[in-house]
Length: 228
Ligand code: NI
Ligand code: MN
Image (tube, rainbow, N blue to C red; front, top):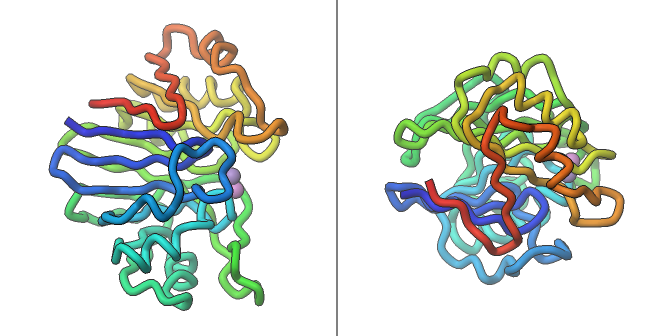
């Protein structure tokens, strides 16, 4: 049994069937909805970072440095983390996959912007991405920050559980996210990147109406988990 826990915004921790501990897009200390602080994470194997914006990357360097976790992301983002003292990094690029201890992980396209929080000289601007991971046969898609894109059609029938942003303003809103569900055809969809601030306030029940019977909608609260 794998356990996925939401910490608000796009930050999730995942403990896989095999016991590997993965953190997605760590934004804890300045995240008004998080149930934990970065210092609460003391044991971790991997950090998957979709892009360098502060609301996805702010606590990545600290947590990776303290725990020894390996940061996985696009090449430039991982290079930036390593320039800040992170020992273990694995740079990749969109369309490429690699087999890690926890399973096969492939970087997917995301349409978004790519500055890196903490990169004061602007040397490491990076392409945002998502992650498609095969966890013992369960295919798990973390979209990152993205608009609705035609590239999502490439994921049709390749995803069991999809984590999609619905906040609007910076990413897809509920209506486009429901079209993404149409494109991807996952079994389960979990909304993220909403209700962190007023600017991205959304009612998940509105998203539920747009999704209809296309997928099972699982709405998490910060600190609550979904097991699969
Ligand atoms: Ni962003
Ligand atoms: Mn964001």
